[in-house]
Length: 307
Image 1 (cartoon, rainbow, N blue to C red):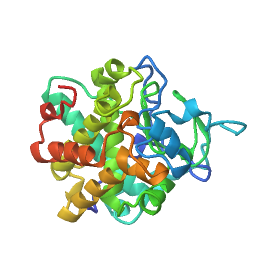
Image 2 (tube, rainbow, N blue to C red):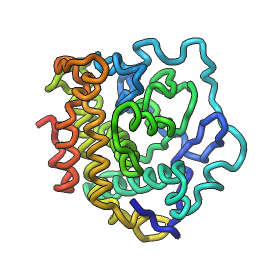
Image 3 (spheres, one colour):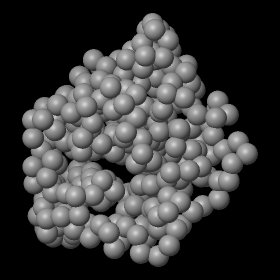
């Protein structure tokens, strides 16, 4: 995966609330968009300490594993930070935090164009970098939550340290595009929130055909849509694509990450057996299948996991 060295990055789309970081200058994100404060994505994986919760389909804040007797005050760090470190695509090619900024820019540019073509208006959502407990519109969260989207404050939350256990504890090959898949998946939930899909799909049920699984698989399909169009998505600041190359190996790593976070794969590691009645995200095969559907068709209409 390669970024245009001369492309300008927009760090205002990322809010850095890491303990040693600084604010990225992002917007406040919007309010209200869903009737429930449930974290969507749960995260997309969650760490081993939360595997049981994911197997049972229980969000981390419902399990009481986040925010208990911990300091959840907002953290803004020192001045400078991302705006100084992540100025161009050259920085994205050499620094992980800047790469995520660039992916956020690209994903949101894609959806801005997609909504425009459909006669709508995309509402941007900031990504929040965090590495310790903090308050969100969906309740308290900490790094054990894994990456997630909060439909109440319309923000994507990511602990960059998460990408290491994605490899070491979940067996994913990792790499820049595996990380990009995670980001694109979470923004898929934001798109669902804007379109009213999340509101209609919250019934609290689990299982292979549950709405929870269908929501997650559609987000995978939306991630595939962006992946197909990543090198054709124009960076508004430069008028040219921010991402210049996505290789077959990149796609393979994205598919590998999708398989690693399938419910059956997580259950097998956590409890030694597969219990489909408790699925909340879909099997490894399903997740790869729907990511591929978006990737191959590039057609949002083909991402109808509810039809």
